Image 1 (cartoon, rainbow, N blue to C red):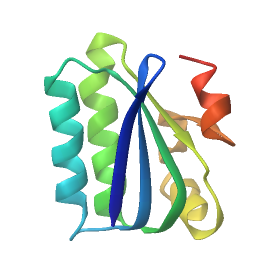
Image 2: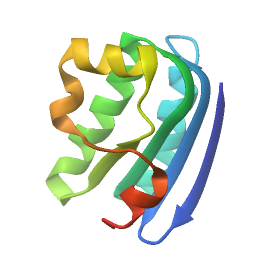
Image 3: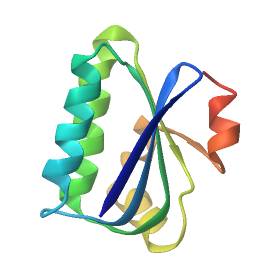
Image 4: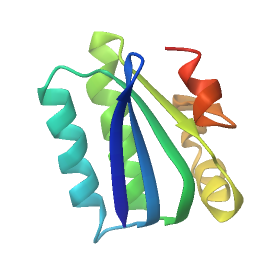
Length: 110
C-alpha cells in the first residue's frame, strides 16, 4: 500500500493506494498517530485508488474518528467506489464520516 500525505488548507489529506488490510493497517495507523502527535485534528482520507479495505483498515479509520472526537476534529472520506464503498456500507461505519465525491469538494468544508 502507498500512503501519501500533504497539508492542504486546514486538513491533512491522505491518499491511499492498494490494499488497507491487517498487514498494511499498522503503517497507516502509525502515520495517523504521527500527525495527531503534531497537533493535527482534521483529516481527509482519499480512497479513490484503494483496491481493498478489510476490517482492520476500517478499524484504523474508526480509531482515528474516536481520537479526534473530543477535540472536534474531523475525518472526511473522498473517492468511495466499488467494493471499497460496499465494505463501508455493509459494515455500517459510513454514519461516522462525511463522504465527498472528490478531494476538492471535501476541502471546501475545511
